[in-house]
Every structure is written in C-alpha cells, then in structure tokens.
Amino acid sequence: MERPSRQRQQERNTERESDEDAVTCPECDSTEIVTDADQELVCEDCGLVLDERTIDRGPEWRAFNHSERQSKSRVGAPITETMHDKGLTTTIDWKDKDAYGRSLSSEKRSQMHRLRKWQERIRTKDAGERNLQFALSEIDRMASALGVPRSVREVASVIYRRALNEDLIRGRSIEGVSTAALYAACRQEGIPRSLDEVAEVSRVPQKEIGRTYRYISQELGLELKPVDPKQFVPRFASSLQLSEEVQSKATEIIDVSAEQGLLSGKSPTGFAAAAIYAASLLCNEKKTQREVADVAQVTEVTIRNRYQEQIEAMGFR
Image (cartoon, rainbow, N blue to C red; front, side, top):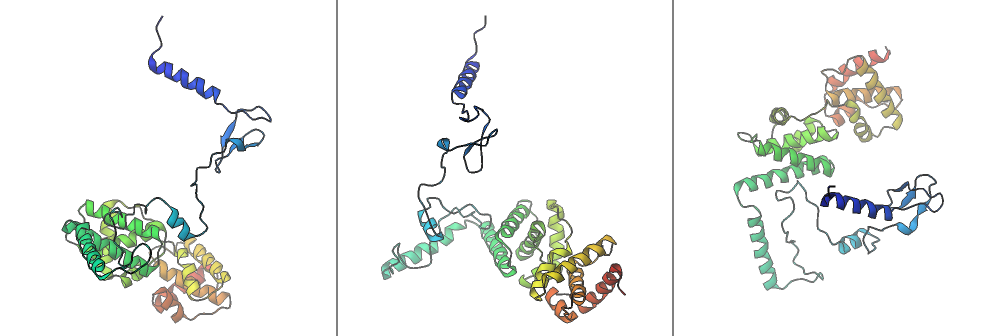
C-alpha cells in the first residue's frame, strides 16, 4: 500500500483544520456563512449577523477632518504617472520653515536653498528625463486650464509614456505630442473638450495637434469612439444659464436627428450648439445665435445650417 505523499498529507490537515474552524449559525445551524462589504459574517439562510466574529481592518486611530487624517496617516503619497519619477523621490518644500512653523535662520536658509537646488538637479539624470518632466508639466498645465479631472491627467501621462517608449516623438515637438495625448485622454475618458478648446490652451497650432493625434492614436491602437454631441449639452447650457427643460429638449433633438443619419460627418460641437439654439426657441428661453456660437466656439453659419436640418428632422417648418 502506497504511503500518502507529503503534499496530500498537508491537504488533509488543511481540510481538517478548516472543518474545525467552520462557523455555524446559532439560529438555524446553517454553515452558509458569508462576509459582506462591512466585513461582517452573515448567515445566508436566515440573515443573522454574527458580530462576535467581526474584524475591524481599519486604522486604530480616528480623524474628524482632512488635516487630522493627513497628519495621522503613516503612508506616503500614491504612485502617480503625472510625474517623471512617479512621485517616488523626495521633495523639499520651498517654505523656509521648520516642522513647528518657525522661520529658519539665515545659515539654515542658505543650506536648504543649496539642498533644494541639488535635489532638482539629481531628480533628472539625463536629457530624456528632463524632456519627460517638461512634457508632463505641460500636460498638467493644460489640464488645469481646461478644468479636467485628475484621472484625465493620469491617462494622458500614460499615453505620452507609451508614445515615448514606441519612439513616436522623434521628429515631432514635445508640446505637440503632449497636447495630442491630452486630447486623446479626454476622448478616452468621455470628457467633452473640442479640438479648438485644447488648441486654445496649447502652444502649438491646431493643425499640428490634429495631425499628431491621428498619428499616435493609430500607432498605439487607441480605441476611441466618435464624440457624442450630447456630452456638450450640459456644459454649453450651463454657460448660457438655460434650464433643465432646454437641456432635455436639446438631447431629444440630437437623438431624433441622429436616428435620421444627420450626424454623420458633422462637427459634434456645432451639432450640439444648434440643438441648444433650437431648444431655447421651443422652450421660450431664446438665445441669439451669436451667444450660442461664442460659447460653443463655432460660427453662426454652422448653427444656422445645422438648425435647419434639425428642425426639418423634428417635423417643424
């Protein structure tokens, strides 16, 4: 008779220990005990909560505001793609004060100035890291000017790093690639920002941004869906101080027009602007074509052309 192997013996011991540690419900003697989102053991059959088995996995300290939470936390900042070193290096604050908020002496100030200068030098060891630092700072600057959330900056930084690793930046400007990466991140995250708005905060022409964006999206295989004009409606309507009724009507106009194939080949910003203009007339909250065109950054001719098509699609004459 063969002796059981060591692995089989360990499995039997583990099964025996798990049988001994099995938890049963004191109400219905069921063994169907699960752990819910609050880390509580709950019986699936009768719903009894077994509080005596609860384990608090949170910190042992309490905090009642953000400053207390920051001061008591024992972990550092999370890793971020928006910094060239991913935020892993030490940062020396520019304030010449100690831990208690007291001003430093002149000797200490000169020493900290020297340390700060050398810290900035050693953070970038070569020209490649300096260029990456500059590109990520440009992405952060433009994202702040556009008012996009933090997640878009992270995605844009990842796209730029991928373009850098694939050697797609050779022969192109750093500003152009970083702007194209930010525009692609806005498209990918569903944050409505037109190419005109991105070009307005950038230092490169719109034609170069569009050309670079098409190139890196094709080379990196970015799956970007066409921009939905309905994404622009809330922002444009808010800038024009229009009601929710106008927004709902504009969304309805866009849906009906898109079903009839009028959206194909049209600018999404112009289509959304025309829908808002038409909805404002239908809801008695009239806005001029000039006001809507200024908010949407399109021409009045574009609004008039799209407006006529949408009105015919809705069955109005």
